[in-house]
Length: 176
Image (cartoon, rainbow, N blue to C red; front, side, top):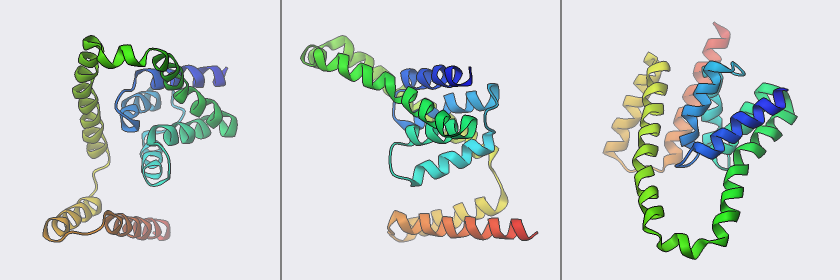
């Protein structure tokens, strides 16, 4: 029964999240609150790991969430079901691609969906910020933001500094 529920939840996410992997996050937060397969803190960790691992963020988070819920088989079910709607839609659209390409209604629908995707991403960003505020993190954010305004650096520099700070904070937390 858990696998069917996983399939339904992640198929729903794949079907209704437009705008890329980060657009899946409101749905994933909803699952965290209602299904309680994983906590919001675990979801935040999954998002962080998914952001730095190869592959689409939405698929990576689905894989992690499925694994947290029901092991390897859960990750396979969640991953398959989150990509299945896109796969089906691409097959259908490819049959009618030329007709869709010039259709004013389709173009208008896509144009209208862009702000909705931006709104979902903004809501997730605000929610993640509000639920994860801590003084050391804010200090690190301020320092890295200041550095980024003064000198052009490779984004990997900021990622490395943040990773080292996170490891150091985790180490201090474990020894405390």
